Image 1 (cartoon, helix red, strand yellow):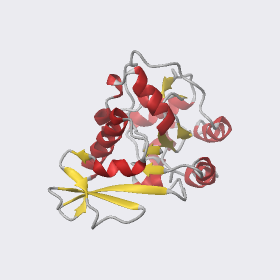
Image 2 (cartoon, rainbow, N blue to C red):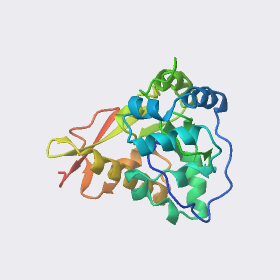
Image 3 (cartoon, one colour):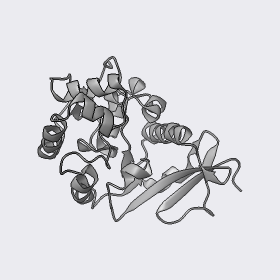
Length: 235
């Protein structure tokens, strides 16, 4: 089983201790293509194209044109899902499980293993840079990479579009008959991913037995490739 998460736009300010040795990401040539286009952008272009504040635009322009410290992917991202995942509390056996089963979708790096070394960046699948569109660049690569895997998608729909795995299930959280609010859904995805890690689940079907906060699997609302976890008591 491979569990897919979205990345985050925010990164930890301080490195975590007790993180195993980092390794090189799997698709450096593609990342370098994107890097070559991104480093051409001025701060003003970053601000306009990515709708950033002046400060964030300057920061991202500087990131692409200067050396940045390398950090393990799972220890680097710090958005809502990752704050709910709590990578800082992972033990050695948890890291081993994550390295085998957890993957982070990335518009810049493609498909990240937890210990892949990354630098801070800002890029979404639909962000066009020069003649490159990350979604189109990565989709065939990631689809091949996950072709033989049993995939559980805990990523957003935006990032789920990067993969067309034949055996993939998308998890959706529903609240009051609608999709859970974005921020809440991110926290739930991170919490579910951590539950899977703590329990060291090997079979995807076992995920349907989990309770994430007050959300439980609803078989009546679910389909073969869409598992719905709904808030409240399920009959």
